[in-house]
Image 1 (cartoon, rainbow, N blue to C red):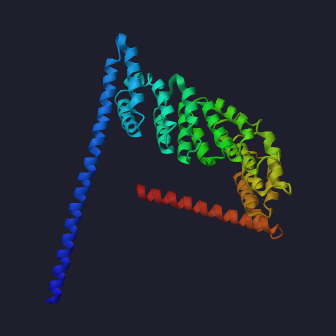
Image 2 (cartoon, rainbow, N blue to C red):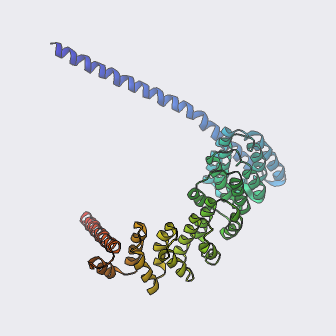
Image 3 (cartoon, rainbow, N blue to C red):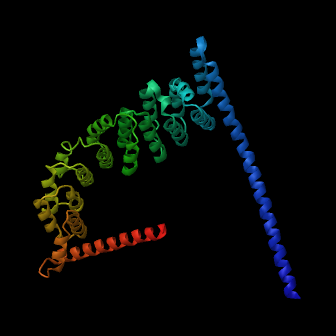
Length: 384
């Protein structure tokens, strides 16, 4: 009987807990709905303001109405909350009618220039948010992109990494090459951090003339930090084959930072340049070369097949560094040298380093082949 009572008590307690959870969830949903309703009303209000302006801004009073609306926006959008609701309403307009959106946004550069000046004096979070709005609607720069870019660059000092990234993205979004260069100069001069991969990614989104940006940045970056140089070389590698001549001298210059030279080797890995062949061969055959250069060069030589290249890779298979040996063997295989790897692996008189890495590479090739065969067979089984 005692056991039965305990069961009833436990079941009753569980039932009460379930009821309490249901009530709690209902209250949370109601509260969340209550919080979202004012936001929805504010967005709807801003959408109505925009639509009303579009409807009245025509005919003889169009210029006056546009100036009046700009003054209204400058006065009201100094608050990041209002700017948020306005930007959402603006996005809704863009989704509804591209023509109306373009006509409306075309008259807004002056308003956003004035707003940028206001946000320059605000916190880093608010500056970052304003820059994000510019990213979403780069058309707001219009003919005043240079002036807006200068103000956005002024956001960078005393800012966090998030703000710096947003400013760079905004500058790339409006296509201001000089603005991007100015921003990077500030980052360099103030010793501010931005990861080179993040920077290379932001530069890749540049909407203007990328060739113009590359030329400007390569000229400017000679006085900048090595991290910034690496980012710029990576950006150029992705979008241009015009730098084979310009990169050749720093590739050979031992006074140039190793990371920059590695980035340049990767450039020649993507963009073939015959004069680079002998330099790359030298990186894997000459003693005293930074091993990091040798590691990347051993892979980059896949783009430069020749008897000289093959001989150099064969020598590199005996390099004391595992990664140099591995990359050299991998490149030999890619240059149709599987038979050579097999010969080395079976020759008991060959160098131990070379024989071991040849065996390792052949095993990797065998495993990869088996895996691909298994995947193909599995797909065929599934399709049946």
